Length: 105
Image (cartoon, rainbow, N blue to C red):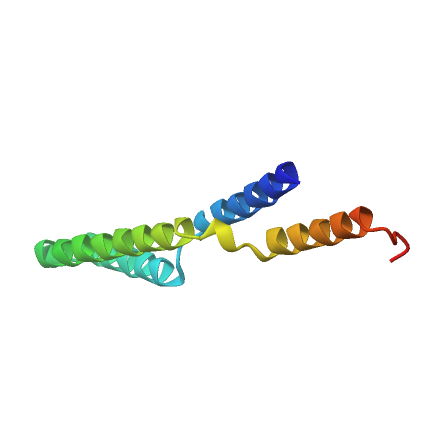
């Protein structure tokens, strides 16, 4: 039973890692904004100094969003997995039936 519960936890962790690899939607929007600002810097060098500050701010915001998404994904409480709880309940039912005198049950 413990092996199966460990496998359930490992599967959930693997799924969290897959989800964790994706950028948050706001981060994708910010990446597009950064690309636009960099195009403006290339086309209008006179605005470069001002726009570089905006690009730096947007990059910091994107990094902050990514860190927050990572923390949320890794803060998952693995003690409360519904699949593990259901598996443990099913095993407990089987054990009680097999331990009883009426095994037809």
